[in-house]
Length: 290
Image 1: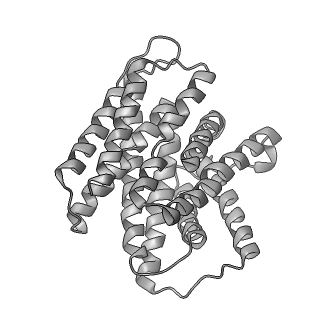
Image 2: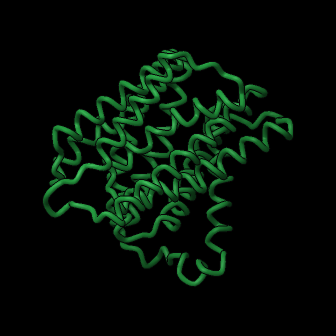
Image 3: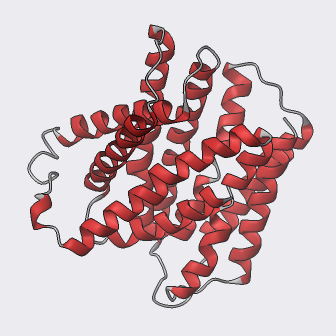
């Protein structure tokens, strides 16, 4: 649950940074900081990389390329369009997508309880993100549907990354630190290639020296809390408790972000709170029904 809380805080910080830094640039900066932190930790702990077979290693790289390279960039774009509260809620669609994909491609069986959980999650998310709120935070219809589309794309990318990771981890024994580092490295190289495309190269790279110290501090804070520390806590939770319990608790970020949104002056309605609770209950049913 600590990981979920940290990810909620980091998402708010990413929302503030998104007003100054485009999504692709933000993903690049986040990747550099998180990779550096993981490398320092690996050196300090002496956790050396074990020998890995080519296929699992390829799956880990693909997982990071899709889930982090494309998924995180899309997620940052959703935050810019819909705000961190609704962006995090749409992200809860990733577990149902993963469950359905695992059912189709990996042969995992979903019982009626799991299917009810998937339905509840989708209904909870849809009920909140389509809400029209009066006041300055209202989102235009075009921006709303662009944000929803990007959110579904981000969730699908994260779901695909999770499936690829699961396929790799079933074949190898690798520490959480190295798994995170390999995935982040793959995602970083994808964003670099993306940034070098003709329509991006003229404006995508930022002269970090020109960024204010405050912006650099916020970048470091978000990467430290949301990418480095949250991943470490996430893997620790999976190791120390039942996977279903850990996975459910890690999807509670939308609950943590509600008081943060209120503190930032956003109007949070009763419908929004009920929708979040319904989505989290759906996630719980999904994991306990598998």
